Length: 219
Image (tube, rainbow, N blue to C red; front, top):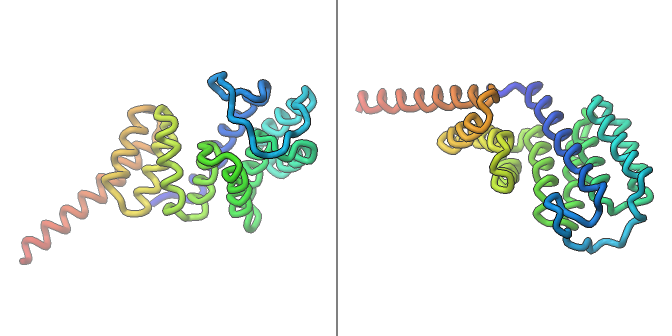
């Protein structure tokens, strides 16, 4: 059985990793991670991204790393007052909300991420964080296609594979779960959760096979 508290910790750590990853592009606005020009945003231009704004973004990510999610939300919200369309601040603001425990916070984060996706359709970071929110809310149906797309975007990310396996397992798709868990374990042999997932799937498939054999014997 998947432990809710463990799943919560995974959501926190995975989303903080995404938050930290978006700060590097903030230093060079207008460029993608590969260094090629990013598509022009349809939204109105924000104020230029200066050293003070970058320092605030860094401070917010530091607060996320200290698990002070309320403070991080306030920090990113302050940046967004002057730069309401700044992708890095919007995403990290949503992540800070996602990791809070108050009533409705995950749903609010999902809605904030919807706003990003309206401006940046297919943004894999926003989809990945949405998937974490849906998984935490116990909704693997909505989480799985987002994790699948994240896994396709970054084929070297074992966690995207692991989460896709977890969602597949929760939906009873054991063959798909086994494939995702196996890829995650191959990418990161120290990812114990993927190995445990493989064990659970093998046990469930073995039980189903035994039940099938028993049914045949009674025919």
